[in-house]
Image (cartoon, rainbow, N blue to C red; front, side, top):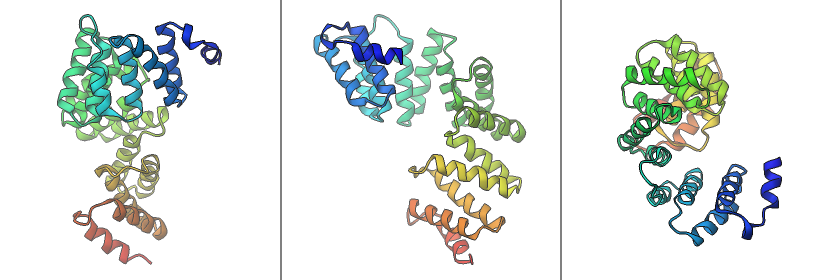
Length: 273
């Protein structure tokens, strides 16, 4: 509140670039993206080569989901010598645009420059778990979660790596920690639901998968599609026909007409009473 009062009292025309950029980041955290952009642009109008301003604008664009524009912006942050922060944000942008190999390279550069950068290690470990390198992911992510709880997705990625190695009890422990730190973490709920489904614990699976689709309601990713499909089948197992019908309807709404799972889902839906 005190920082907000201070920022609110700032006279923009008299403020330093540093104060304007700090104010912009505060406005972004408050959800006031338009105000944040105005402040950054004022700095860039005075000095188009201001690397810190380009970096802050990169962050604003990233949080608005403007990843292509963010990548263009970060390339204008010409720092003197290698910059862990520039490398980190470049990696995060590339990760969001599914350019995972390139993203890994940038996260590795961050770690070379700053070996205790846990955020870069968390992202790199996540990408390792996604790319089928569970042992390497576990080695890196165990170090991350032992030192910080700031990155819930690191716990979820660690759980995924354990799952891939067949260590389901360890996986669930990490998924639940991720859920405690960030109840909106889709992957933590999704993978716990998959494990419960594998173990024929259908009520637990339904609870976890229902939470997964609740926190990812607008996504049409393959994992979300699979979550609705598994949720419908789990509801059938526990006798919840209405829930199964709703899950199957959502699955059919977000999959393409030629999706191979639609035949089974249509058959199961038709059998509901």
